[in-house]
Length: 183
Picture: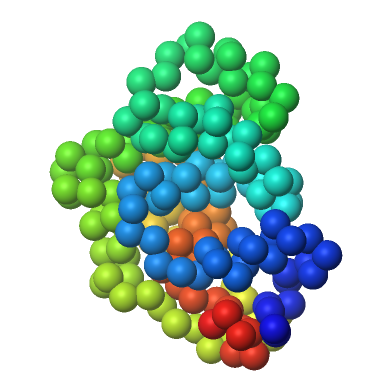
């Protein structure tokens, strides 16, 4: 099977992520929050680091349930800072809690986070036609707009590059290169 050039063939976890998740449209608020959280923790680190800690994050953040994470208090933040299975970065942990609260506000105002986030692409994934890895952008005017709107709503650790990675992960954009069998 031909895969995108960024996939390390020797890493079955990474291959599985590429083959069965990356670029596939997500419409579940919990999974959307999962990727929002994971992508924000990835900032400054490799995706492989986050991917290999994903199950630890799942355990530590109550299955990525935004309603539960939104109720975390300072004692829970302190407990997370002691959890060696995740990235122990205070600002990122605090932003995960803050972002869960902001996501809940969007759910109340838009009916779901899914409805809000997919509105950025008019409900239809952007299908790019790249032939080489070097053509994939780190950010786009669309991710700029998403980041700006999320920040306006009080979200943190979600710059344009992080938003574009989130869009790729959740299938709002499909950046599998043309020769990839998983396109």
